[in-house]
Image (tube, rainbow, N blue to C red; front, side, top):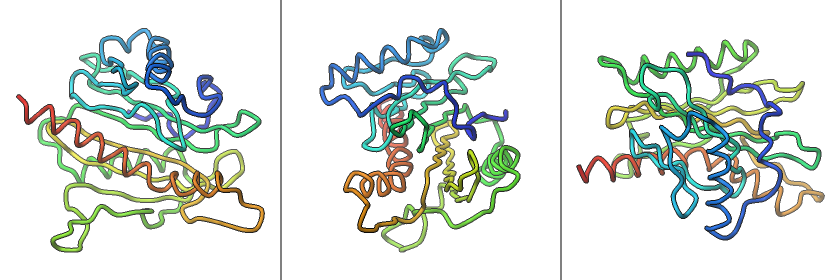
Length: 232
């Protein structure tokens, strides 16, 4: 299905400030966000630390990130509720405009699907949403330390896209794991870090975290699914 990830929309009304510091506060905040989606109760539960557990797969959407914060959870139409979902995170500026967005998608793998064909399908989604997109190298790589080469069990690509008449970097990361398609998409201002005499420490930290958080999210989701699968 075509997802509406590309647009920075006004629906992200929960993302109005920094992250909560106490687990209890963060858990309460995330519970209210999940409860705002009437279908989410069949697909998600919020843990004590604020992480959002996807019930069918066992994947944990992290409670929070340094640069983006939970905005909503998505449950897309499917034969079985919970087999096509997303956890949406965002950061807004002082005027309430979304400037960085990250979404973790989990989709039940179709029999016979392979990684290259699934990845190609999501690449087409990006191009349908952004006909102007220019493909660029992925911002980071997940490397097999024994060979020094990229791991073979995922695919990633970067794009330069235009949102609200501004250029952004968009990252796409996809894998097939334990019967699920794991997809992370992130859109943020820069794929490299820009610093001048007026750049604050917070701005530098946000730039760095925009680049690395999609890959940390991707690996955290993998780890949580793997833990549940190994305990069965």
